Length: 319
Image (cartoon, rainbow, N blue to C red; front, side, top):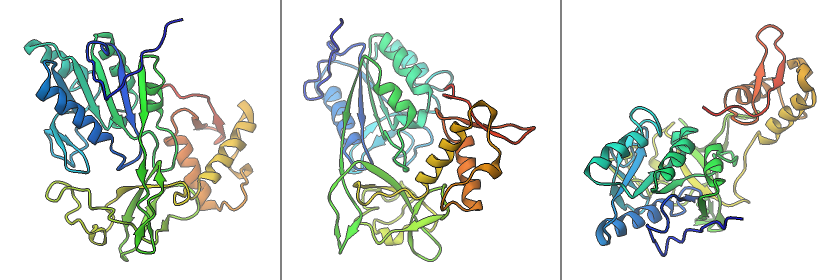
């Protein structure tokens, strides 16, 4: 039996960690990016090792040439559209090797790269590099992000889970309980803060208040133009951390019940009119079915184009 090597970020022995991956996960505001940027700065300033940082081109909150944390720490980075293939992490690393071997590859907000992230981590570790990934590990419904679960499950990966402080306001003070969830919040046209979600009967749930929720964004770079969460533009979502008691996902129990009904129907499938879930109205059922068909990765549901029946087809193949 081969003993798994565990990575300790406090003792960053790059030569010992070649061929391994470190996955830093947790909710928004938990310090993942601070840890990643701190490691990169130490390597850059005090070692002979060459490190290269990457972010997804869709993530522009810190600009097009760097990654950042909510405490305003920065590190130069290359922004790409893919993890493998054209305009990808793997392609840019090989190009950079011409100026000297890249020992450490850091990937910020790894979930943006979807399923190709797992392929990239395997390729880079097989090239005898040390790979560090920072990412959310759950979406704003509290469900695991599949590709991060895949990367964390690799035998050569050490995963460190970070926690944050709950930012939901309690009587004018932050709740401050340990937070492991992130949820997406926006301000509607009436000025109310709402939790975003796309399943269930209600379009959104109003929140009583947030504590310094938008203060971590950088003025002039992020679309949030002011630190005051009361001045968050209408319709512009942002993320905050929440503890278990403050975190609520309206409609999740409905989607689980619908999926269970489809699973119980077996291979023959289930017509829409046969799906009856207590408390779920017609409009809510429409949203739940659209979510199960279009957005689930592993528990995949399809609708037959001829019969209209809904069937579960097993784990969806990640591409």
